[in-house]
Image: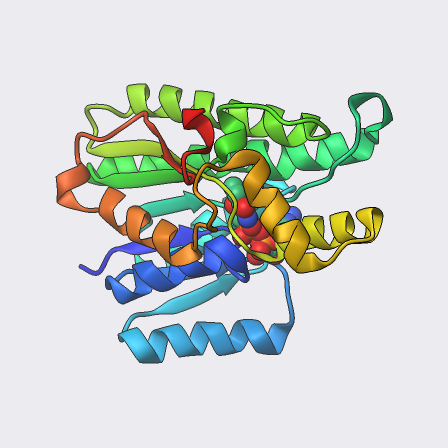
Length: 258
Ligand code: NAD
């Protein structure tokens, strides 16, 4: 039977890249995320037609546990199983800890961390029952090291790596693996906004700030792409990765090597 994958936050950036790679590898895809309804419909029908797979879309808000449970139930209803879960949806906000708004802390913890718990909790019984499953948490280099002004994001990303280890241990003999991917800079709308904010604040150009951003953190002065991350996700779902579990895999141009 064709396997199916939920990719949270797949209307943009990394999630869309991973959904595209998994569709090309033959998985049915449950898309999720916010955005323009016509654009989402285009992605949904486009992936299905190009790759001969089934697609569906859940408008679940990752800050709402009941929505998340419904998204998992809708996937089983649409495709007959949930085999792969990519916990990817995420948001960012930057400020010093003493200035960090409480509601931004709560939203980042809910969407970047708790959503992965609720989705994993709902999907694991299906995966364990069928003795096959893959959970991939999109963490970050910020799951392994910190940066100023990102208290909630760094806390959430360190937390998701901890959760990855626990789920991996608990599911170790059920054919289910759980791993985290830790990207460095990927030029998505989430990062583009940080670059534009910096250019405005510093009175510089977007191109200058792109180079500065890479230069501060990465020995390799190039962005990782959603396609790179899609390729790794497909590998983690393959038979060759059946004993790769509980890991945090860096794809970061050497960021955490320093
Ligand atoms: P993006 O802004 O391009 O995409 C984020 C996606 O999440 C969108 O589809 C958006 O609609 C969805 N989303 C946001 N809030 C949601 C909610 N409440 N419910 C459902 N969906 C919601 O960002 P991106 O850069 O592709 O980030 C994806 C993931 O990768 C995030 O977890 C981010 O922390 C992580 N990451 C990004 C980078 C980077 O450099 N871009 C680096 C490391 C990790």
